Image (cartoon, helix red, strand yellow):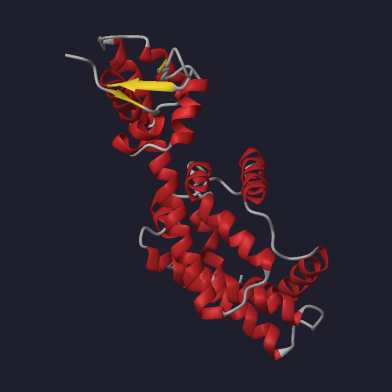
Length: 270
């Protein structure tokens, strides 16, 4: 029986693969058809369908064309293919994790934009960097932050994350809006009170004096202090600040002015 032959367009239609893709596979020596002796045109056979499905199957598994090309020379798969599959499995798990993070970040960002209608670019970039690097922050926080506090710092539900991000977004909007006003200005006071209320709520603390309790380090030890400073620098490297140097300097000053009466009160009680 004469072997059934296909032109490239017929083969493309029969396999639902584009002519352009078949050209590419030919150029890369992954799937090379025979050539018509008279016309020089590509001619495909039934055997080429099996080879094409071999390519498509390995592509489905996420393998690169270079790896696929190596396997196209083999007629059988042996136990060594297990190692290839396991490496690919690890890569796909990592890719899936990244995709899941990106999908959740999109969901959280859409929520913010729907609520705000418009968000400062620097603030949104900072929030997105925070979403992207949550896992790295958790790793960095080990040994610095107490384990029970870590669960509060990095909530599991998307709803909890959205509430926190909305609070941070509101805070930065106010910083940009009120920059230059004095610490005793009612709007600045309200901004700081709302921010500290947000932080205390996250850590489930009743007062600012309790905040040092979130650390697992001995805060009076010099080496622990250096460790904390290194931790803060690394977090700042992962998450860019959304405020300008001027806004940052103003925020530091009004925070000091706001906190001074509290510290004086505390010293007086001692």
